[in-house]
Image 1: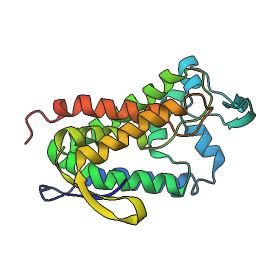
Image 2: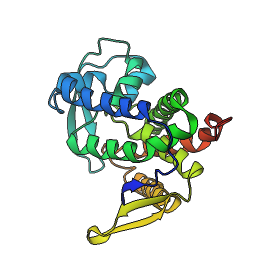
Image 3: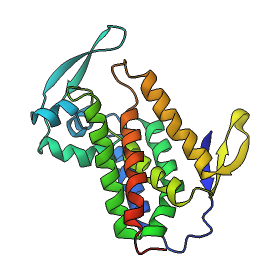
Length: 235
């Protein structure tokens, strides 16, 4: 079940912040990451849990072992700014074209509704806080991990958590089996999505890398828990 659109009939403002966030992600990926080919920039500004928990900037190849006992090497480049800056920079970077296209589609579909409800400034703050919560969620799962984290997924997961609480019955268009398009309530589409994150996160817990499911879950929980606070005084 893959979302491709939703009900925007209640939107009465132009979601400038949502557009700016999407534009920043695209610009960073194209100009600074070189469409994912600039390894030095990507690894230097990704978020590495061990760098955060130790306050040390790792440089050189780091060895990792996956769930099958296979050993791999991950390159680490010096970060020109304090490693804690990477909490922010990693939110605007992606691993490949598929990664950024999927994330930006979700943000395009669901972000405008949240911004319309809580306003431009509040949406910007909400988005960043959810991204931070997502990063901490992943770090807590393995404080000594040297696997870089990057992507807007955690912050966008917070948007999804806020959306399902504020707009549970909004109609969401989704692609299901054999590319059929159906319309379902938001609580169904996003409920299945977060359920998949929990299941897949559990199944992959013994692996050495891949998708940061804990970040998705942490971001979603943060968005769900905080959206009512950010919506105070808004209708």
